[in-house]
Length: 195
Image (cartoon, rainbow, N blue to C red):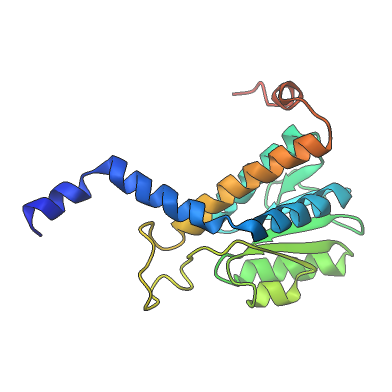
């Protein structure tokens, strides 16, 4: 590694600009349709349960928290207070690379109970998307394609997808807040006081 390459690697503001540009490129006019579709499904559901693995799971947890802030009946699969799903409910899962065995298994359980299933994914042709009632596509690099011949994203493995998820989910929350006529203060009032 040359001295100038080492200096460039240490230029955190430049790296941040590159990373933010990559995240921004995920958001196209089609993202508006995806956000509307996700919002429609959330508002139509009596109860929402979210699930994802690894860092994707953290992004789904963040979405469920925002849905709770909006006064919706939202839960995270695996929490011991998560109620059973049934007809009229929604299982929202993330499967960026296309499928995870636990995601597929939980989708099967939810469907057997009569709940709808929605997958957020970067691979709309993946197994989870084929099994879901609704597919929300976020076209970002995941570990399914981070070794492709095309130049990989600066952000490693699935980080680009996960960062885009966090922003996308917060944007959907903003749209839902507007659709339900809530003020930001109402969301803040629902935030826990046990921190």
